[in-house]
Amino acid sequence: MIIEPYASHDRSAFDCGHPDLNTYAARHLGQYERNRLAKHWVAVEQPNGPITGFYAISQHALDTQSLPHRIRKRLPRHPVPCSLLGRLAVDRRHQGRHLGEILLFHAFSTVLRASREIGTFALIVDAVDDNAANFYTRYGLVPLEHNPLRLMILTQTLLQHMTA
Image 1 (spheres, rainbow, N blue to C red):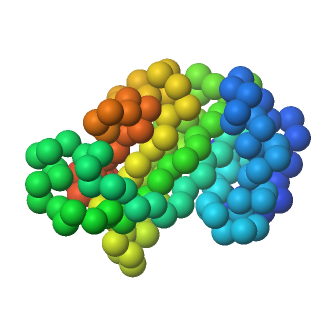
Image 2: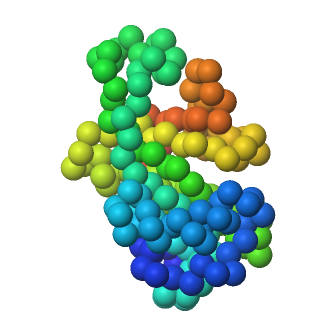
């Protein structure tokens, strides 16, 4: 499996089983990419082949009031810079093969590379449903207060885990 930047890959047959993510892949992914609203990384079996999975990542400002008190008390009162993993999906034909995990770890590496150049306090994830939220918690992400489908992992924590 190859993970590469999106570059007009074929998305027509992509079906992850979740209508919102399928619609995003089919109709919005290219537009978000062209308008630089998000950077997309795609999983393919061969270079420039049809996508078997993808994730979308962008910058985000997180209101510190949504953070747990133990973290919030060390931060300024204004929003802090984060990376946002807005979407991650795997085609049904490739589910159960750890591709979601591979894409997530690629996203972790992407965040760490970006954090060398720009301020990145944490990675925020918007899980599409409870099953997705459970997937992310297995990799150290924790739900934010008042929204169990929005999870986070501190960049410092990623750095410790990815270099261990």
